[in-house]
Length: 286
Image (cartoon, rainbow, N blue to C red):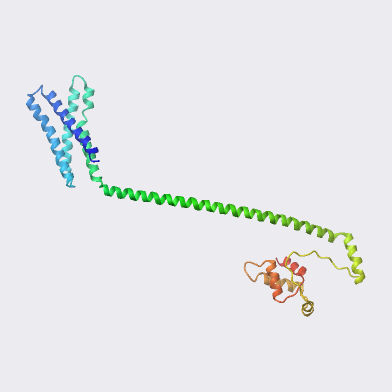
């Protein structure tokens, strides 16, 4: 892994030094003896390489010196300036020389990248631990997602079953209510008919002359037989007293009691009233 950043930097450094030295020999060799131009080129490349070696030594010790870094960059900029000046004064191929003038600065940038990689590099043990932690987190997330999907599917199935059961119950209740409504309508029609009244009069008048009892419709609800002794010993309650008792029993708990609960408690308390009167009082109160 270290060679992936070090090798490009080394290659770029070698190319940059050779190019700088060659340009100085070609450019300054015509104006001064070539040994002098060679010394100038080696001086620029040597200073560049020396500061780079010192920077690498400080980096290996975990240290950093800004003055050395600035000095190294100044050598890189001088080499680039020489290449740019040669490109601008060349009689031909100016664009080609300008295209390679950035090589010294590029080499310094590659060494900078390599240094950043070294400062952030981790050992294989640390990298393996990080991969293990990431894999564990992914496993836990996958298990959590699977659990949520399973719970959602179970809840959907339960709600579907409850909804279907509720729909069946509602259909049965609607059918029962329709049957009861038809029976009630039939009873009410028979009760209000003229022939029925005459038939009842002809039957009851022979038993008790002058008396025609009212035929009340049956009450749908639980009834309890009351003995004749209880009817004789307990006086009949008036409508006002019956209303008060029904209201007290109905509001004895919160929420208010239903008719069946109220009726059962009314009987259990020892009060006496016919089912018709009790239901009529319930209707008046409720």
